[in-house]
Image (cartoon, rainbow, N blue to C red):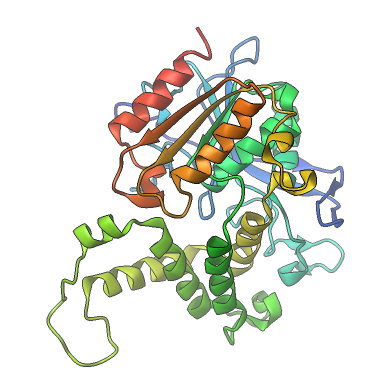
Length: 375
């Protein structure tokens, strides 16, 4: 099969196993764990061209390329990573990893708990962004990468890039923090709580041990997805794409009548087929808990003081979930620390999902910035 121009082509996931215990932020310890990952491009002899790509809520290690025999299996950031793309795999060695608790091959709630011989279920510990970064550092050791040329990600992935800069300042040259915030607003925490409540109250949830019953809390997961999906799209984009268009006219019932209703239900149905409810609960909690300034009395400047790398911070004008104002908080704290920081505010109508799209101005900014990291 011939790869499309700009594609990394057929890719193969890999699994790394770690036998040393991992102490988590909650105080719990994972006795051992596995991480699923993919790589794209070639690691140079100096091992200096590696870029870690961190994923957001519902993504995975599958960043770019496609799987053999699986049409339409392109990675979630395929427009960003590949030969000639902003993360040019002719120059960089990109690494995508499925975080702990994710439901795409890494150790997760559906994995077997060695203490019981049964799936972890709700006994799987709460994980944080900091725990993910610590696990990613173990993966870097496994791959023989002492220092990443860059760590990048959008949304929750951007939070991981920020955490890397604070937690492992000597192991990162650049942090690309895209469509992210230094912490969640009360409104964002509220949206996450509504989504979790939908899952927790689903009769098929069984306190998180639904695997033993051969069921899944799909009704709750669908509602959670609909709530989340609304926050990813701007009102402008939703109005332009759907407006008040009716599918077939008013039918005076509770069946989907408007196109937007049908769209949300379709997205929710599709999501519930491949995502795990216990994973959703934990990832939204990781979002809620992320707050580097918590340990500095709310002072973000002091929280970011350990960072020594260069930064690119990007926001999107219509992103109301992680607004440009929140991105500028990060920029201000970095400037206060006299760090090397570039900031771009991209005019885009797509809302929070804009970080996943190939807006020319956005991609040009990323491309130009990364071209300066290796000359």
